Each structure stands twice: as C-alpha cells, then as structure tokens.
Image 1 (cartoon, rainbow, N blue to C red):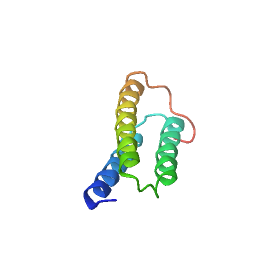
Image 2: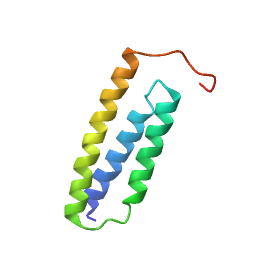
Image 3: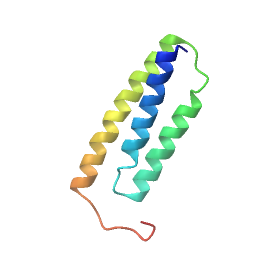
Length: 84
C-alpha cells in the first residue's frame, strides 16, 4: 500500500472513531466503535489497490452514515442509562 493511501486509511479510521464516540447512547456508541475496529482489523492485510479503493469508498459512506445517525440521536435523545 502506498504511503499516501496508508495515511488516507488511517485518517478515515480516526474520523470514524471520533464520530462514533459522539453517539449520545452508550449502546450505540460501543457498538459503532466495535464495528469500526473490527472492520479495519478484518481488512488490515489487503494489498490490492482496487480492493483498497473500494473499501475506502465504503468507509466514506459509513462515515457519512455515522454522522447522520449521531445528529438524529442528538435530536431524539433518551434518558441516560445506569452505565452512562
């Protein structure tokens, strides 16, 4: 993987983690964080440039989805649970 692609992947990973931490609900927050970590770990050894590009596009779509869900979650915030 090229150095620029590697830095883009790391940047996407960090943005997804940052956005996932913004979920107001503990359950959604931990689920989103675990999903992001697992997805990146599962594809950590990917070398094919086309596959990496496809995964980056999927990651960008997931980032947009997380951002939308966080904003919706903030609009309809529920009561805090005991673990929060």
